[in-house]
Image (cartoon, rainbow, N blue to C red; front, top):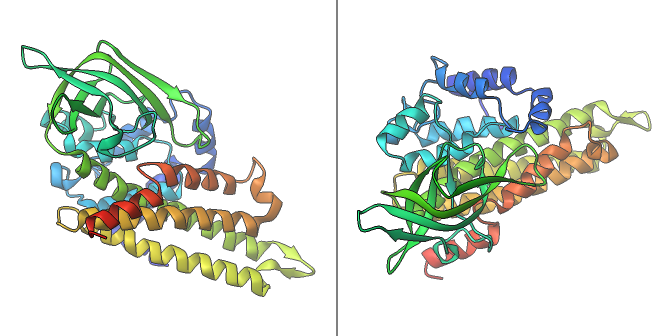
Length: 353
């Protein structure tokens, strides 16, 4: 596999995450009301080798471009990190400078609020209204669903539709009048989601487009999916080497060998798509590269996580084993920011097919 621990960034991030996010800690945070450890969140920002980790270099971070961010996201997916990292990384590029500085220091959790009751992630699904006041400010009315770490967010980047204009992005601070950040019950307990209600909630308009936000979100999630699938495959191979049936390790059986080999091929193919998408940030080809990556990685993660369960047999379905946690993350991530069918249709429109 291409995850080379000779890469200093990958090695450093993996060492840190092994310390702060072992399986026992993931399970503890699954039961925690907040869903993440604030001390760990601050440590990720304060670490002298990873300073500015939460903020890409393209918007002022300390040297981490999207190719490097993809490495970090892959490692967070590998350990099912219970922290608002994905949410903050995808929202940060659209924040004003004062909020970007707070994000870089770990003092601000940010998230995107796009989808609504319809479950759509494009402009056609946005019904939240933005009304401009005579003084020039904005107020938002509507409801958002499936907002990653929305209940814990300090700031929200909200997609809303001004009258007679295209959908735009608006900044809403936690605690603003008319804002309610309520948790959603989801199958994946390692990633918190929320329902956001806005009732004449004060907001400020931001630069950037919904299309840009969704493309970056697809790139980030694709990288994370590669990491989770990689760990699901590792667990399957480890189990196949330990589990003995008929006096032999099951990994010696041809059917199990073939299954693991197919999982690896699937993973590495999707990894290429995710890497290309990360390298395309800032280029004209980003929209189609992001659509390909999200579609490929979503389907790959589900297949690999499912096959990992097959290798584990009944053991993988028990609460005590971690295999089912990756399966749940794979299934929920498949729908987040648009499912594979949505992204294939988006790619077809981009290509004029």
